[in-house]
Image (cartoon, rainbow, N blue to C red; front, side):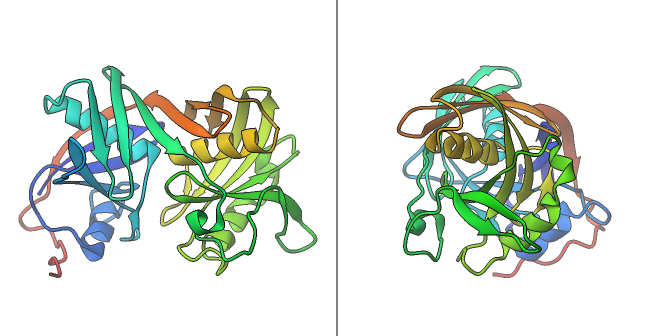
Length: 279
């Protein structure tokens, strides 16, 4: 098994470069940072009839994701390394996205249109959550917007001077598995810094707290524009791992631009205790 590893602002993924079958147990082993290679997910190339390239995105817990902004950028960089050119489409299984390699290590991805339709988010509610007053327990209430950018997100807004003063890790872990979200959810805590910039913390579905997330950045910007906290246009999103640029239109169409940093290639030993693939 051969793997290519890169990261987007500290959010790291492994691209499978050989043809081994992937399943949840194998993915969990590969992503384990003690007994495996270690990563926030695995990107499995696959054929596509509707795009130039196909991709299955695996979370480190062995579940799959509909979309990942950082994962898609890393996969696009890898495709460019394989000679795909600078402009192409990628089929994630739930959507076809357009990718452009602006320069080595800088990728732009059209992430599609955000939606607060409960069916799109997988939210068990009769009406959309847009600045929904969400009780987080112990008297803590925050405005929450449940939004899909191809995958589900629950965006909480905070007025705290320092987001680390909020128990966002606990809120994220609880909301990810809240039964009102039929397919679980990604969770973000956000605060507005200016008319076009935000700071966020991220609990990623299937991965937990992460340094950066492209789809989370898109979800937060879309929720912010929708609720009038910021205006349509180019936004800067600040995370512990760094900054991403998100363009959001009035009708919530999103474009993500950010870096990819190569780490290296890895070959799994024939003597490694890799779980057998289940067919």
